[in-house]
Length: 318
Image 1 (cartoon, rainbow, N blue to C red):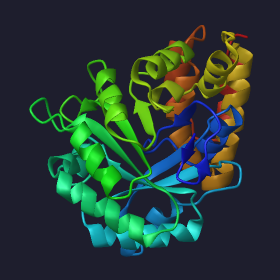
Image 2: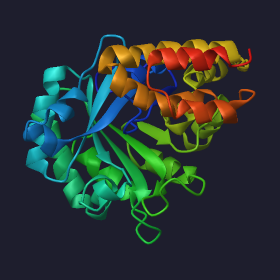
Image 3: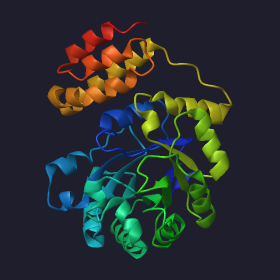
Image 4: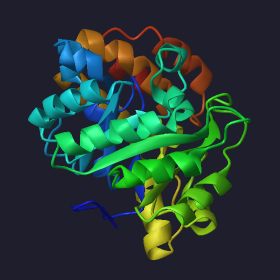
């Protein structure tokens, strides 16, 4: 498939997740077969007001392509200015966040709150589209709540305003991340627009990825929580859908090898102090399913140095 003029070779992409999809994790997922990755969401106002922290989130490397940066905000002109700034970092795609349910985002009229004003969604897409010369995509939800399920309407407006692809998470903002995602809304959006549609929600295995594509007709599957501590999911999806071969269980030894590799990259990019605080949650995710994981996770929350992690890994039964 193509998003605008960007070739996407594969079946699954990495969803943007705040505090998770940093450069180290994106590169890791690409190495395991992610066809496309999207960075952590970046405040449009933060960029325009010259926040260094916001700019740091835009850094992309040659080992994570094709890659998008994701912007959030609710002012068309500010979003356009932010998109121009983001282009300094040479993203392949600019993605617009219209789906984040977090209170600090939605209660300020950004993220999923934009779906309450479809006309504004269109103006934001149009402004960003006019500001950059790369494809522009949007990520939306089913709607704001059960009384305003309007993903189809918003998707059509975004498409008419210049969006090159639409990613749909099958829950309303009210539902957050529970109960099960509604894949039928993804199917409805796919039938309603001509641009590629990316399905998102509850894909935690290669079998579910194949099922989503079959049930919804989506062009690409977006993996979020299913990739936490499990970058192998992209390889497994590719093997199942592309080659009709079932996945093999990942050994504890491979999990630990990849955990150490992942954390080493985090330390390289962020410095050991910052990286090791963030590595605590990743370590807990990698330990899932390993014998004695509960006791090891208690130690993981106290990690301070990379050497601490090495010592913890020595106690993992192989």
